Image (tube, rainbow, N blue to C red; front, side, top):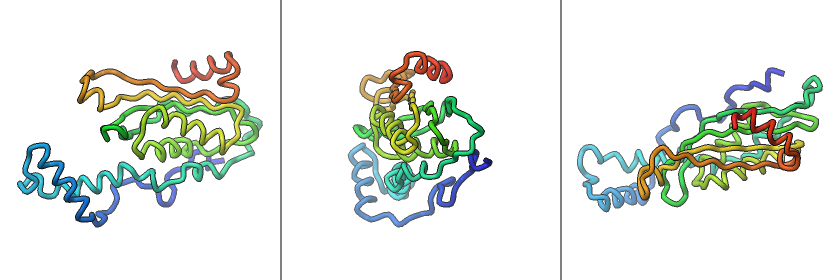
Length: 206
């Protein structure tokens, strides 16, 4: 059962990706943005910035190249009769707002109540990261993670609570730092049974 606590898989990105070629039109788009912001893209400190920005965004959005459901394809039935809540608490994640492309930084608590099998614990975090490494809104991210676990594992219940800070609100516009946004999605018994919902929320610290 050591696979339930598995480490990185082949293909996992655990370090910045290699320097991939940057199309000139992408680099020029960054130069245009720098000019429009009021600076000179040809000055020493900025001359390599277009390539860096392009490669960074390829990394930020690597979730577009993943199928989140694939992470849940391998399950385990030999769990010694365990039939209680499985919870990963406070999983850190980063995403980017699709409206301003500004950072979203937060944490997620994800739980499910197994029916007859479980999945390796790292796979739950991988589902979150696959969806968060796309341009997002927090509400959709919450729903996508919950729906993926529900549809792939067919558990008795799924609960996802995400708490995050949005730079599009804290660093621009209304400029209100220190404000967090909380979203949740309850499915199955966690939605239908108040006692089960209270139990999972208490385990999450809410």
